Every structure is written in C-alpha cells, then in structure tokens.
Amino acid sequence: MLQIIVAVICLVASIPAMLRWLRVAQREHYIPDSTSLFAYRWWVSSPVNILLALVGCAGIVVSARFSVAALGSAVVAIVGPVGLSLRGVSSPLIWTRRLKTLAVVSVSIETIIVIVGILFGHGSTAGAVIDIGSCAIVDLGSYILAPLEHRLSNVYIRDAKDRLAKVSPTVIAITGSYGKTSTKLYTAHLLSGCFRTQASPASFNNRAGLSRAINEQLLDSTEIFVAEMGTYGQGEIRDMCSWMRPEISAITAIGPVHLERMKSEERILQAKSEITETASTVVLQVDDLRLAGLANYLESNGKRVIRCSSKKSSSADEAGSVDSDSLQLSEQRTDEPTDVLVDVRVIRDASTGLISVYIGHEIIASELRLEAHPSNTACAVGLALAAGCPNETISKQLPTLPSPPHRLTKVKENGHPTILDDTYNSNPAGCMAALRLLKEEECDGSRVLVTPGMVELGNRSRQENESFARAAAVVADVVLIVGRTNRRYLSNGISQAAKQPKVLFFTRRDQAVNWVRDNLTAKDVVLYENDLPDHYP
Image (cartoon, rainbow, N blue to C red; front, side):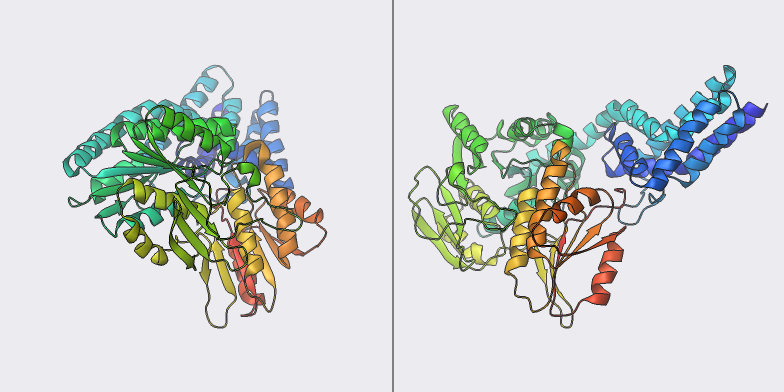
C-alpha cells in the first residue's frame, strides 16, 4: 500500500516537471531528443541543479529498497531545475492543439509506467523514474506523434499547394546558415519596384509556417512570392520545395549555425542545396569556395547560375579575414572589379563605409550609405535580376533598402545610450560584423556589449565563443554576459585577450537591460548581440 501511495504522489509531482519540458519541446519545434538535450544543459548549469539532479537519481536507486526515498525525486521534480520556469516569459507556454495532444500522450505514458511498476511491486521506483525522466517521456511522446502530426499537416500543405496553383506567382526560395531573413526582406523591396511582391512573414520558414502564410496571407494579385526556408536536417527543404516548386532559389551562406544538429558543415551544405533542385535559376554567394563549387556543378547540369560576391576577388583565399586580437578586417575598395566570373558585386569601402553595387562591369549604384550587409545585398540584387527586374529599377530601389528588425538596427533616443540591436543574430560572421560596427560607432563614453554568446554550434561552441569574446575584449569597455549557457567560454575568451574590459554576469537579459538603463548615459554605445529565449539556462 505504501508503494501505491508514494507512486501516486510521484505521479502528481511530475506535473510541474512535465509543464517545464512541454514548454521546451514547443520552443524546439517538437524535435525528438531536443527536450532531453535541454534537460541535460539545465541540470548541469549550476551547482544547485547538479545537487538536485544527484538527489533525484539517488531517489530512484534507493527507492528499490525504501519506498519513501522516491519522495526525494518528487521534490526535485517540483522545484528543479532551478531557473526554468513553468510558463516562461520570453518563450511562454502556449496551449495549442499540438501541445495538448503531446501533454495527453506524455501523461498517459507516465501513468502506464507507474501502473506497470505497481503491478511488479516497484511502484515507488517507477514514480521516481517518471519524475526525473519526464523530459525523456516528452521526447518519446514527440517521437510517437511525429507521423500523426505529419499526416495532419498534409491537409494544410494540400491547401497551400492549391492556393499557389490558383494565384500562380513566381516562387523565390531563400536559405542559408545566416542572412536569409535580411536577403528575403531586401529582395522583396527590390522586386516591389516592378512586381506585385509578397514575402513570407517574420520567421515563418518551415513547413507549417510557410503553408500557413500561403493559406492565410497570399493575395490573388501576387506576382512574386519570396519564401525563406530554414532546416534542421536533410530532407526538410526538399519537402517544402516539392509542393512550393520555387523557380528561383538562393543560398546566402554556409556556416556552423545548427552544427549541433547536423554535425558537419558538409551536411549543412547538402541540406541547404536541396533548395536548388526544382529551380531553373540559382543565386549563390561564391565567396565561399563550397558554394563556388556548387555553382559550377549546377551550371554544368543546365541551370542558370548568378554568382554574387562582396569581395573584390572571388577567391576565398583573398577574402577578408578577422584577427580576433586586433579586429582588423581587410575590406576591398570600390574601384571597378575585373573578375568576370561574378555577376553581382556589392563592396563596402573600408575607409568610408559606403557601398557600391556592380552588375557585371557596370556600376549601378555608388557611395550608398546603407546599414545592409554587402553579402546579403548582393544576393538580393542577384535574385532581382533572376526575376527579370531591370537594372534601372534595382538602382532606384537600393537607396531605400529597409533595415530588418533586431538585426544590427541602430536606435538613438535623446538622453539614452546609442543602441545597436543585433538580438536576432547568432552566427560567428555576424557577431564579428557587429563588433566592427560597435568599434566604428562614434562614442564619447563607454562601449558596452551585452550577450549570451552563440548557440547550436556543436563541437565548435567553445572555439567560436572564445574567439568572439577575445575580439569583444578589444572593442568593449564593459561586457555583460547573460545566462550560463556560454558563460565559461566567454569568460575564457576575455581572459585570453591583451585588453581586459570590465565583465559583469547576469542570469537574465532583463537584469542586464536594467543595468544599462541605470548606469549608462547618452555618451555610451551598447551592442545587444543575440538574445536567447528563457528556455535556455
């Protein structure tokens, strides 16, 4: 009887833990194993959580002989991991149909485990297991439901396919390890000068998001639809292209973003290259030798390829490189390039910061003062060319390129510090570009960096975050490190730099924002680099 009582208590105690891990599963797109990965991060994130995890595991082991020991695991499930809230703030729990289904399945699995445990005389141990292992149970539920969710989503996919057939726009698809959202925005702006153009909203870049955007927002008058496509693995972009059928596609960059999931940049390239399969015209950023090689391969197979560059030479060996100790970037000047292998060049002058745009050997815009990244701008110009937009229209639209929100956006209000908002960026190249802007920004006070570092870099997390921190130490007078995810790597990187800025640690971003508000003035400049939602430790 005692075992049954303890088992029931453990089952009830698992509810708070289940809510926490359901929130993580929702934020991580219900990918099986992602919840367990985040659980590990949380349990090892602090001494308190490590201690709680040990107590919880001890409860499982000892409960085999003493049933009441399982109550220790129940207490751990209620209070831990410390710092991961039930509902969340920046990544709140939203009770969608899919989440409710996963909750029912997960609770059912827990109940079955407890019942089987009771029947075999180990009810208390079974209760302790579900308390500590609720993250794995949520992952198991996601795995079980994946085929069902895929079939259910097919209804919306069929509707979206029919909607595209009815409206019949030219579909342009854009992917890349980074830069795809900015390129999408720039492309839509350039094309709006001569076509009725729509772009997929915000970060609606997966199967569900794109089908929803098409079903709910695609206008009958749309001539060109610009779609951003993201992926966490091979096959996802191919699936989206199978029903969207893009005629023009682009890859903006290949880098270590999502390396944690895809394990190598070669696999990232393979996954991104799926976007070229249905397209007759492909736009590629060929400063990367891998994309230059892909361009040659696609061209040899009969596709039209538009090569884009942000360097004077298309040779990756001659492209600019970053020295994290001096933060020097070898940028090219705006004298006319001579490399005929590149169709579009967008070059930022190193001394003035002004941008010039070339199509072939023709300069269509010069000395533009744009916040736009040259590489993304080059891809957007290439896509506009591919769609048939005249050079004159592109030239007319370029000076008014919009700034993507939270991507190196400058905000200046009277009486407050100058803010460089780069909170939607989390890739090594973008972080270095942001530091460069922080260095160049006029400042009579302190230069301040607020960052949690970069994530999803797999086995390069330490290397990339330490390199970023070393470069930041050269530029920033004060560095505010947010969260525990990359605290050790960032601290190590700063300690290796010749110049040592003041370093402050904060658990949450709002605490760092409050420090900025209370301690800085209009003389200071603050770079907010990346922002992790609060399901990260």
